Image 1: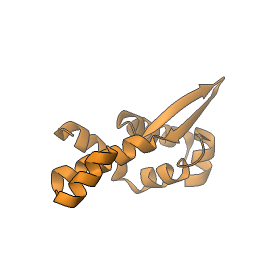
Image 2 (image 1 turned 120 degrees about the vertical axis):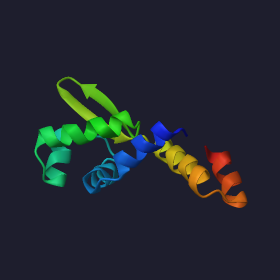
Image 3 (image 1 turned 90 degrees about the vertical axis):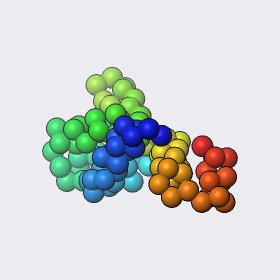
Length: 102
């Protein structure tokens, strides 16, 4: 993970609202409208948050007609967390486990 990837990941998950959005989109695809209701924000604000999560690769976007659905890219989340751990706090046993999964 290079510094830019780490910064994008940190920015994406460093915000409480985006953490809540990621948790809400974890298991089922959600529309911007559904997310807005859940996090109690206006749709344009949610769209802004989703753009940051998309740029970091932490969510996927699927369009069905006029509706857009977002889901967590779980593989990317695991990979980013693992790579960040390897970079910031390497430990021999943890390192091998992370390398095996990422």
